[in-house]
Image 1 (cartoon, rainbow, N blue to C red):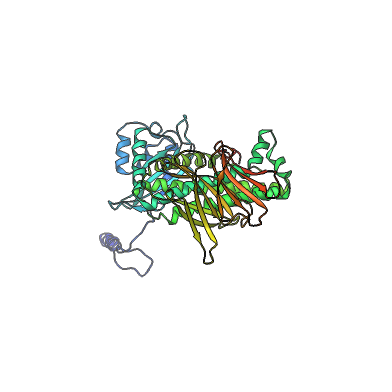
Image 2 (cartoon, rainbow, N blue to C red; image 1 turned 30 degrees about the vertical axis):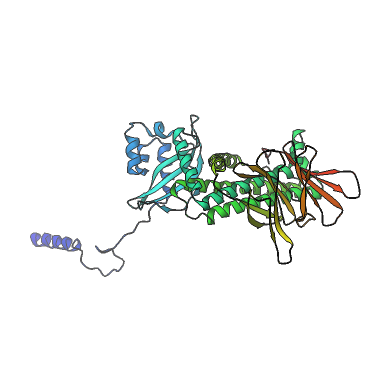
Length: 462
């Protein structure tokens, strides 16, 4: 009896493990597929950072095989290889996923992770899909690594100069960023002067007249609109940059985004101060450090592109007007080989006009552009132009397209025009290299200065 009972139990157990059918439809069968959602790049970076925080070699498991082999061959601890991190930065920006020529999927995560022992911060994670998982293939650090960076820089510049779209977009981005700096320096010059005397920002803002305050607020809005254009063009005009330029394009897109975010935070704090009298200064330390880093990526490439572009026959410029988003804008191609460019509407009224004029005596003439009531002064360079001055007064003011040349007190050429009201003559010239616009009433001898701009930098706190 015992033997029969044992055999029955064994048979029952054997039947349970044989994969027989079950009345429960939810019970798993050998044909059931279990799918696991793979980790995102951010989750991989966070797990790596958590393991690194404990100096755990398990962090090597989140690296691609090639990267892991190169690290483990050094026979060092994780802290000795990567340094000690303060914390993972979850507020960075993940770029789009790109498929490389060898069919690998890659992406990058731009962030700021301070490290101890005075090591430069980690500013980029590079990820690659390996066997269905996102693994770390490299890091970017906030410092120059010498000859390697020089080679990469030359490669980037060469690719841009060989691509008309990339060349146009980087030059337009540079011009708009200079426009933002010009706007800030001109409109906020009074705050710069007040700050130099020791006045606090809160006292300065609350003491302004409404008209003066509106001028500062409109400047912020204009700057924000130009930065949005830079961000949008980097996104939509260059949707699939070459692999070697992905970091650069992402950098100038993020640079515009962060500068606009900083501007917005300061503008909102200024508005709150004006309305309530309470100054709550935003903490923008990390954003400022990130902007400095991104500027260091963009400007060296832009400088070399500007210096080496000797083949372009025209220079692209994007002109903006208005004080609300989105700004009105027009793209023009400035031609240094012609004295005058003009586009008129159906009734013969100039839409925009560009006049070549030598204002400083060098071989590269300047170009004064009129559009939508504003004047733009582009300084001539051996390979193009650089925006150094523009007006912001009135929008649809009495400036118009019928202007000519004259001579300034230094003996160089100037641009003269008479307003539509026929009561004022305007004169734009360079005074010791500094753009200057004056207005002279036609019925009086007295001349008053309207605008002057010098190569000032944006104040550190604005």
